[in-house]
Amino acid sequence: MIGKPELRGRPHLKVCCIASTAEAELAINHGADAVGLVSEMPSGPGVIPDHRIEEIAAQIPSGVATFLLTSSSEVDVIIAQQQRFGTDTIQLCDAMPTEAILKLRSIMPGVSIVQVIHVLGEAALDHARMAAHAAHALLLDSGNPSKRVKELGGTGRTHDWTLSRRICDEVEVPVYLAGGLTPDNIVEAVRQVRPFGVDVCSGLRTEGQLDEEKLIRFVRNLETEVTTVPK
Image (cartoon, rainbow, N blue to C red; front, side):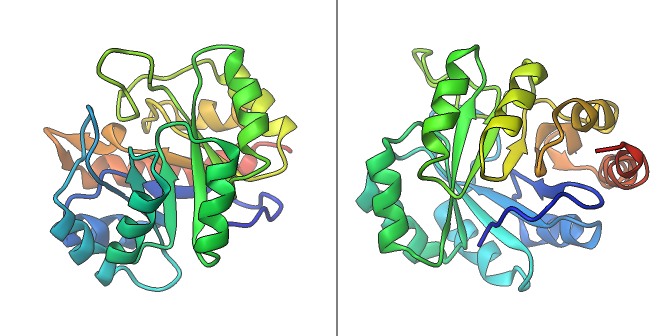
């Protein structure tokens, strides 16, 4: 379960868009605290078939969180997904009512629920405050659910980190920062936002493949630079 311990050392690292057991192993060997497995989405990278999600999730060692990214907003569908894949965390990539999130929590008491907040403007603050009353954690991303074809993540874009910092300061649950993070901007992102964790997908990939060199640089920057930033 996701808690909210005081931030010590580097933020938690979630490597998303994992496409194979080999990628999962690579991410974990270089310090990932969590891996993200992307189920069907209306757009964006990283989607893998259900059977592969099931296969990868079964191989993740204890102590490493498994996030299932879902675009569904139907409680019964999400429960069925979790029961099939056995992931310990559900990442709700589209908005869900507070009542629905609380229902998920009551039916799946051992599963963490993370609500994605797409930081498009000041409205994200109200959305975050409301979601924080129900979800175990929030994840701040740069999608746009209002587009004709919804963008629910994986855009490779950053957003307004000043808004993200305000959200981190105002809510009482852990907050992950996502959206356009790379080895080159991760230090500045964490200095500005001070999140509980960071979530990265496209910033660690080359031609769609998880790039070990980028991963090493990302983790090195997270560990050697960010830990020197005063609280």
